[in-house]
Structures are given as C-alpha cells and as structure tokens.
Image (cartoon, rainbow, N blue to C red; front, side):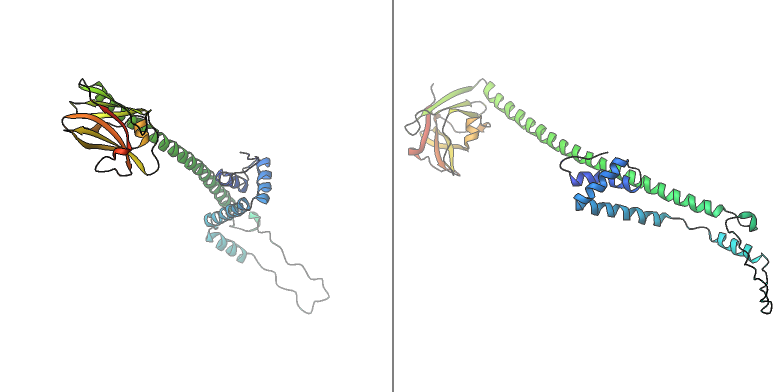
Length: 293
C-alpha cells in the first residue's frame, strides 16, 4: 500500500498499518522509503513510527521463551566430568607453559551429555515470537481497516435512515392531505387579498364531515421577522382562531388542521405577532373569503 500523494491524511496513513509492516520487515522497498520520507516531513508519523517499534520490541520481549534451566545444569555437570590438567610447578619455569585446553561449547561430541537442542529451542522461540508479533500487527491493521469500514457504513446507514425517515414522514403527510382532499364533503374556499396585500390568493380545502382542512397559498408575501399568519373562521358572526402558520407551511401545503366551529360563513388570515392574538388585528388582515352556498 503506497500513499504518495500531495496532501497526506495523517490519521488515515497511520491507521493503514504501513508503519507496522515496515517495522516487521513486511513492507516493500518503496513503502520503506516512503515511511522514511514522510517521517521527516510529518512529526506525527515519526512519533507513531517510534511507538510502533517500541510496542513491537516490548511484545517480543514479553513473549520470549527462556531456555530450560535443566540445559544449564546439564552443561555444568558435563564440564565437571572433564579431567582438569594440573598447573605447572613454579620451579619448572624454564619449560614452555602449555596453553589451557579450550573446549568448544558448541560441539556436542566434545561434551558428553550436552545437546545443542537448547540453541534450536531458543531460535525457535525467537522465530515464534516474531511470528506472533507479525500476526498481531497484521490482525491489528486489519481490525483498524474494518473499524474504519464499519464507521463509514454506520455513517451511511444513519444518513440513509434519515432519508428514509424523511420519506416516511412526507408519505404520511401526503396521505393525510389526500384523505381531506378526497372526502366527498370537501369544498374549496378561495381567500383573496385585501387592501393590505391585493394580489394575495390563498385556498382552503375544508371537509365538513371530517372537520378538517388544508391550506395552500398560490401567492402570499413572507411575513416580517417575529410575525406569523393566523387563520380565522367567522362562526355565528364572531371570529374564531383556527391556528398559527409559518410562511413555509402556507406556501407549500399545510398539515390537515381541525375546524370544529359551527355555522362558519367565512375564512380570513391576519398577520399577528409571534404566538398569535386572541382577537384578529383587522388592519393586518391579509386575505378573506366567504363560503358560497
């Protein structure tokens, strides 16, 4: 895996496992050269490379197998069984002193009962330790890769879940609107602009059987800051508030809202302060429409 690019994502580079591969001698010459180069450029990579080397060394030391103590005892016993030459007399200094006999410790034939197996065991232990370390780093690198893939998948899943949830909500909204529009008792009340906004046009689709309505503005001006639209019905000759609506709701299509008043003769919209008003502000009336028939 080679990461020679203009701008290096340090976290991604460290998580790739290339530092572990170089430490264990599993990387290609090009990757080794790359790590050496980037370690000089990026202090974060250099520091992590040192930590990886230290972790590898510590793990190998922890897993190192010491030779069996019985081997040492066997060697000492074998040495003790070898006849030792007595030293030359001090009076015979005219003779050439003989050199002490050197017994090679690595020759099994010269030391009775000592086997070179302990060296093989030590070598095997070292190889096994390195092998375990290599497997650990390879598996660690793979685990990091999987963690990254899982995190990405989880992010995509959450995004997809949000999109799906939005689609479900939109579907529910449309179904509720369609129920009102498709009802046989539904009638359309057209509200037209007043002197405040002569060109405004808002339609109310009202089902008398369901006692629900939806509202849609064909044309209306966005309200000033801290102002809301308030819908009213004239029932028994008196204004009754039906609800407060934001511009986006009226411009698109409102959720179905309840209309429980009796003997309704007209619908109207006024512009009120945020939170609404108990009575309509007549000079702020935007549209009004009588119920025909």
